[in-house]
Image 1: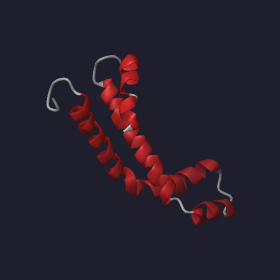
Image 2: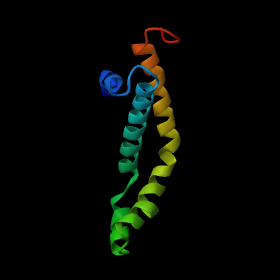
Image 3: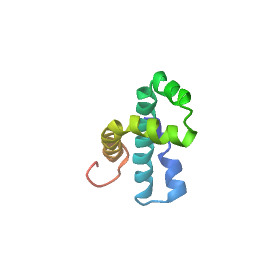
Length: 97
């Protein structure tokens, strides 16, 4: 719920429109994707990349991105939950009010 603390800052930066809501959804999605990707990367995969002498770009393209693909759906769900939770917690009008 730390992201909701950032909501006033996002309002100052983006104004009173939809962009702060998009920012909250994006932050939730980035955090979910980063955590799940780091959990899915095994040391064996990273060591194999070093043994195969892959460049950093090739390691990202062939190992990190492929390891994160299963979590894309989960990330979309987390972003949707963040947007709905924001509507219920912080709205002054509309569906959540």
